[in-house]
Image (cartoon, rainbow, N blue to C red; front, side, top):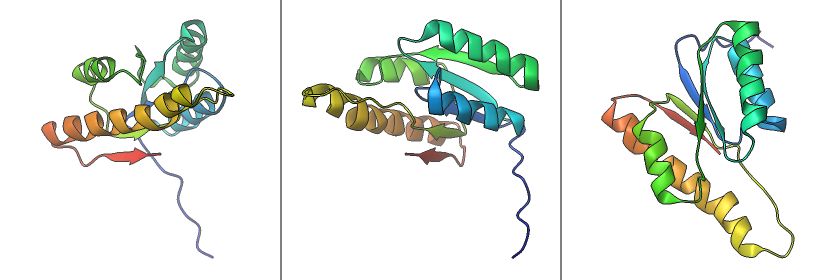
Length: 134
């Protein structure tokens, strides 16, 4: 098997949704270690997002910006993308509420669709060949 070179994302901007804790934080750490600049999205986890921002900036020297929005609300997603221009979007935010189908649909279906729709619009406007992960 051929060795696959380690990716280098220097200069690229990644938006990671639900990034303040758990899987999202680890995705951010990995990408930063490969030179990626990060938009760290959070909704309710501001202190965790700020701690992650500080940790990554000190460890890697990449640019990190915190962005906050309720991704199930179209107007907040539009406002989020009015201020950022990612090259890559990682739809990581997710949640499960027992016996609350509405919340599960909003967080796990509606939010990534709204984010992806706005990301495509922004990437096209900025003439970027972007990537969106689900």
